[in-house]
Image 1: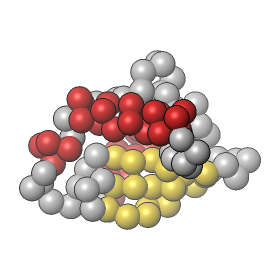
Image 2: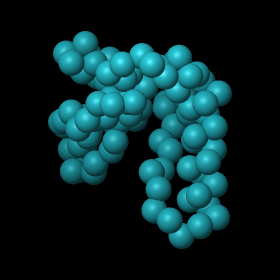
Image 3: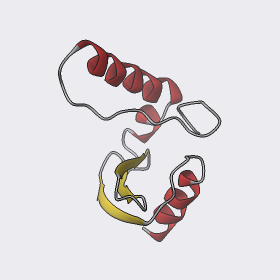
Image 4: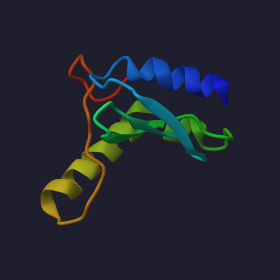
Length: 97
């Protein structure tokens, strides 16, 4: 798990978020952390690192991840569902591999 925390901390360097705390939430198909900034805003950091590698090759493909992000954005714009908002990294792209 320490290796995943190191990856999470490295990933946070790509965002314009100042991290006050990072808390492990869960690991299954992804590894998820709760990130809190100094103003107590909370973010979910999802790493495509799973416990097993049965579907790892498929679900970690950039085109699959991008497809999910497009779907979430469409849900946010075209429905009244509450879905996670995409936060782009400092380079302006939405996916870092």
